[in-house]
Length: 406
Image (cartoon, rainbow, N blue to C red):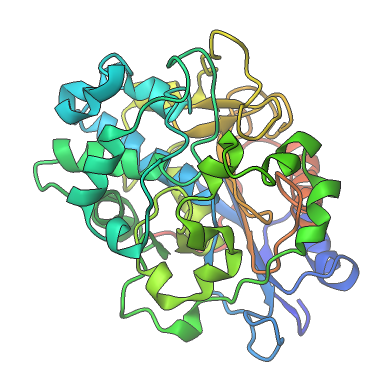
């Protein structure tokens, strides 16, 4: 393409390449990648810029980057795979598989409610640090002892950092090998696909492979996020502060530039990977080839979510949004895909991954210069707008893949 942008696109997807290039020339992109699959074939594979904020080291096709809450979508796919294997069902009470979870009236909370952020467990009262997070047994005791912040099912409130730990413990207690979420992901999904996405960065991945995160200026928050949410951060007792401020070290986005934090398994927020891996994972849940995903599980992911009894205004994010089975769904403050069957997740700063069953596409965008918008950023929006224009005009038959998948 040019000296700054690399990769290729299939016929008809040129507007995505144009938008990607314009992100660098017009919108201040530092380093990024965008990958799209359609009908099981890769039709967009773009990367460019620099993986360090000093702009000395080029972003390569194998560069991995922290993706914050885009991780939640990957964790939801892992959980869906476990459901497909019969380890547990979405409508099972969590306590059926984890008896200690029943403490403080949580005995009837279902897996479905937990994954929809409706369990009232968005905050953890006990202080969390690296040593606790690295010890699944100790962490499980803390999670099981937490009191709900509301009657489960009445509301939803974004389980910012801890949802992935609840998912991990559920898998650990039902998997015959007692694997954590990150280990299950590596063994059953990314390992089978040859995909570079890690939940708990292995020691054999060099630091030079990982892009450096540059956070947004905190002064932009009042301009980009709901005022009531911004004001909540002035009160350490508020639900948003409690949900997002424990563990304390994760309040600083730059903490994910530290190797000791990258090694931890935080299934809601410290996944590190490529756009190729994220798009490939979503594509497998539309067009399974190397991963066994039963049709009923795929149907569940595409089904509309079940809103809380008292409406879908989130008590943490202070905005209307929809969740289902660990995924974001179109509606409220976030509209994506071409109909309500779409499912995916957005991360702090603008990264995202999602599947659009109506068009048979899987989309992923990752970057290292964070934006301050609650969902996406102007660069991601430009790419998604271009992608939608393409899929609405290109015939739906399977296009030629840019390269054969194994």
